[in-house]
Image 1 (cartoon, rainbow, N blue to C red):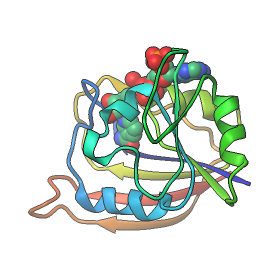
Image 2: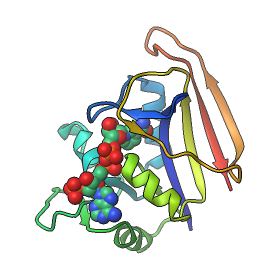
Image 3: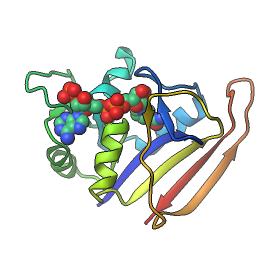
Length: 166
Ligand SMILES: NC(=O)c1ccc[n+]([C@@H]2O[C@H](COP(=O)([O-])OP(=O)(O)OC[C@H]3O[C@@H](n4cnc5c(N)ncnc54)[C@H](OP(=O)(O)O)[C@@H]3O)[C@@H](O)[C@H]2O)c1
């Protein structure tokens, strides 16, 4: 089973600001969509709530939300109370890959626990202000694929889509 984390990370490690994303990069969102489609996605409660209500649960994917709140409900999604429980639920699906889709708390927990074996990192070539950060990753992670995307009318920043394996 491949357990992946997928994130857009600025050059200064920032992934979020005030509960949302510090940028709008539609082609990166498309990459996220097509990469995670038909696979279980696991998110922290804060990131789940940052998805506009009309787009959640994300379509054609089992959405698993992790929270410590035993009364939490997320219509159309599965609610779990630990990362381990979320992974168990995801593994019960017929799938070869599970995606951890953020945010900072979930990425940090999963990577520090050593359960992630693939990273889809979009490096955003900017240094925005923010309050949520991707964890530092070790030298064991090697880039196996990358694709550059220039800044344009719809993308204020250039970015590089990357896949890393360890
Ligand atoms: N750039 C990107 O690719 C990307 C992707 C995703 C998110 N983000 C950004 O990241 C930011 C949110 O990140 P965040 O770190 O603040 O929040 P988060 O990781 O999305 O969610 C944190 C919440 O998840 C629950 N949680 C975390 N660990 C848990 C555990 N072990 N057991 C049970 N519940 C657990 C808790 O929910 P309760 O408080 O309900 O108990 C906690 O408050 C936002 O700015 C968002 O836009 C960026």
